[in-house]
Length: 196
Image 1: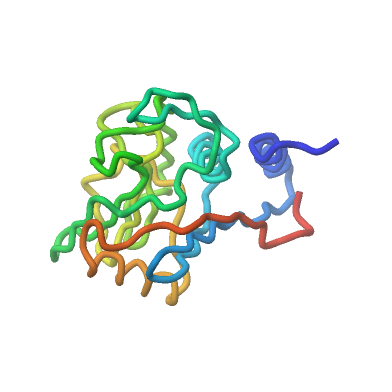
Image 2 (image 1 turned 90 degrees about the vertical axis):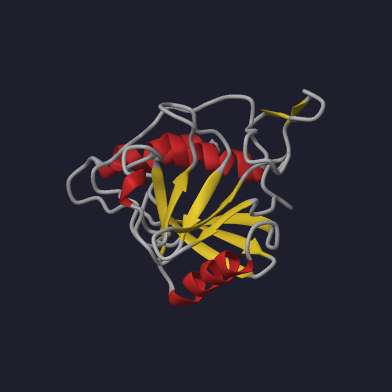
């Protein structure tokens, strides 16, 4: 039997609750016009948010196209631009996931918040953008090299950019400004094949 990715995440999460069973690391490679950003996904602490991100990226979840109102089931983030970028000494981030490019649309549904006290808006955290409690959907952002503690308990952190090479790409996206970088594709992989 082949399990869908959300089902595999649930199984892996169940195994993680067993003593002595290691969790497989799950990573997303976000290929952008400026290079590849590898994100370590926190599926054990924000499983619903990660599953939503994956299913939209892979095109296995239906969403509503904002221009026509038609239902789509295709890769959501491909060719999506970074439409909102802030680059100041106190706040650095690049936001994407708006089909209309306005930063106000989403997939036509909202997901519930999954705050974990260990997932904070540190430098290079990855979070789901929201307009208030339980309003996340498709828009997400990459924090730059500045922590943004004012976003803790407001936007769900679901990953982190770890490698120096990926962090350099994030810095380039932020330095380029709004509308000057885009996503080509997103792919996913487990980094420990021996784990459940």
